[in-house]
Length: 265
Image (cartoon, rainbow, N blue to C red; front, side, top):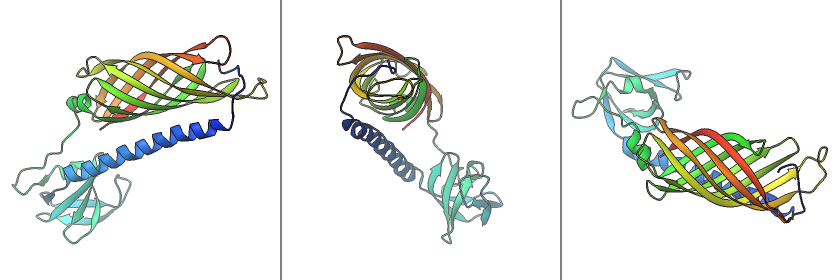
């Protein structure tokens, strides 16, 4: 399919592609912003050091050096969390990062050890936002995709996709809007069905195929599954069957399969 081409209006193609990927980028920034604000509001609290000392690193990782130590009995404020690292502020205003192992030995004002909430399968079922990347095969060509999803309820989600297609005879990109339905969203392995529409742009390689760029409308149906892996991570695999509405007498049919990872909020 990617090796053939007909005429189109090239000037509209970059703007459509830019719009699709700009919206996806904005969607990703919005999701991350919501998550950071929510995490800060949920986790912000004051705890006291129970170990002989608490080591503060310059960044969220063991590779960052320890630059400050908080002694036993002193308090720190938890500002935010990044995976298993916590940004804290000492009583003197010094801010740094502490690993989860040490934070679990701190005490809340009541004197009990602090407990950190972890995402679980129930959160997976009730998640509203999802952002992921996938790779696979689109009609014999390699494909790489990014997507963002918003769940209207545990069964129905709206998704926006951007896909880069890399073929031997031509390259291309695709933008689509999907509606996905999960019949059993509370299952750890949750099957789903999807349908959607969008556009595909094909750019033949001039050294291999003679032709002009083209942009066509597409529609698809598909099925797949989401597997809750751990914490906020999901493994996703799916198959889609596309119809490409060309300007020729016959439309084209293309099959796609892909797998990838996503994280949810």
